[in-house]
Image: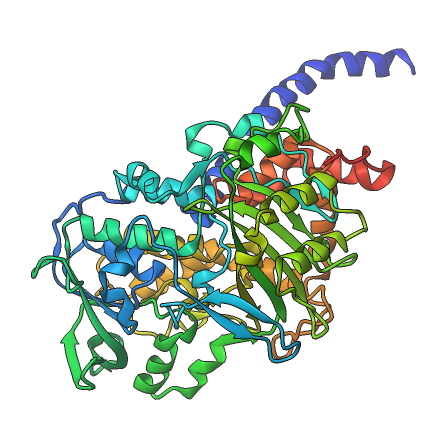
Length: 586
């Protein structure tokens, strides 16, 4: 290098240094702005601040009609009460109108004997009161975000949850991907703001319904006051009447319990009818647009699972503590009393399709869930068969301490007193309302399964319902449903927040040949996503920071784009090139 070159380099150094001083802060600022944007648009975290916030201009003197009174309907009606003077919830299930539907703690459900048609084996199952809600007696997963929402929506939630026997604990799920435990640093999730709920769906639904009643704004349910902002009526939504422009739903008709048709004026109508997705059918008829049915996609994930409930012995915590189960990352003994799920065994799809989950319920019970997929799936109908199902997973092997926990639970005749609910998911569907926003009435919206039914394996159904209610609440703080852009804005916002759930669930299901894809699609759809998901799983079992980031996205308290950070992508590349550390011991 000659002297002129050296002199030139020396003269350029101040400019290089200045550029670095500008580029790095600019990059960090842009990264922060981008993340804040993703939080606002792809999560409901920012909108939590508007939950139970009084409307600035006062309540609208009008009527909101909510079709369906399950989780989606309850969340929606409760938040609508801050915006409307009258809310009508039309619910077809008779049981909802009985005091038993609000019993806290929830009473042990009645059971009945059933004989399996194939094996001839007899087992005890639930005599469900919710014939229209398939998942009422199935295992449920409740993410941290849902706890945050319920605490804001219902100030007395923690106290009432304790009365109901619901476990509100750190989010200890002991996630295992393809036999490799996630390197999740539980010490970073021990604060109150990180807590999740561990209970049955029926316990939480009854508690939420009771809290809505306790808000003092309901009527129509047995034991509630005669007049209230939220009025429950027994019936089935049967028709929408549009105005002359077909841009607004003016009236909603429903058939009451006597079979008579009742018609009510409405300012906004919310479809919370669940998997029946009644809103789409009624809109197709009212608009005389049969092509509207084309915005609905459906596929068959062919999932089979058993939710097995069993009594927990009084000395359970002490006996399991004696097994000296260690927390994978810290190496410290697992705090059994603060453990909600003892194992969440998830397959990668390319190795195995069987799932295992063991977690706490209310009323001194625990649920053992086993699942598989495909026509040849054999689901156990007894405790002994379920234990053998777990033992049969040997690539890698289920840990010995887990089998010992199952043995403890099955002792003293408890194995003979189990209640087993066999479940199947043969339909996952999504209604792409945002693709038809140019013909939809502006004051029609849909929340929960009425616009998206996911494979229940990932346990996102209830929290998804809260997203719809929260998104609607935030939009009502901005504009009226009479705004021509109201429905369009709602569906586009909701699509940004829940569309990824549909894509991820569907693409993971497409990784199994037993899945029947949507019309016009193939199993190749989502191949890149599945590859990325496997690589991400490798990173989370190798790196604690990546595992923590991933878990926060699973609990919907961080945007999914956090897992695309340069740090995690670099670790993914590093592991792909040089391999990962040996996985933690279970």
